[in-house]
Image 1 (tube, rainbow, N blue to C red):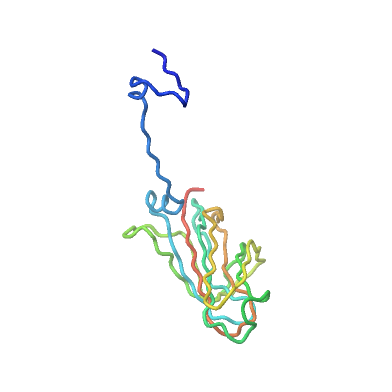
Image 2 (image 1 turned 90 degrees about the vertical axis):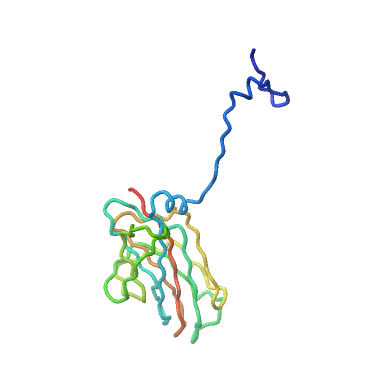
Length: 191
């Protein structure tokens, strides 16, 4: 017996017996990669503020087979002194691509967010105001609203670093002392 599929009409028991019930769940990109591939990481860096540009984190993708997907970034200025009071147009965070590490800074290792995983991020990450060379291609800028204000940027994996590409999180300003705190959340996956 044919069953009518009019939404205003009741369905026969024969039709309902053939209906497959499906349940779906939505998870974010980073959670999916962590749970299924154990390739989600966080890395934290700091630098002492000085007038000019100070880089808290510089990351280079050292893999030959995987991209780095940037999912989330955070910047924070703590105990800034000796410069223009916040907010102002002279002090801002900068996210840029393309420069390479010349010298200085300290190496920091991204932490795998899948507890107990032996996977490591194929990346060289430097913190502590390293010296960089080349031309920075700024892709985003955001301004500090207040002292110790946490500034977030959610890229949801849309910011991609192919093998041998770099990213830097820097602060541009006129403060002569204080601490710059930065965090990058990332995943790794096939090119």
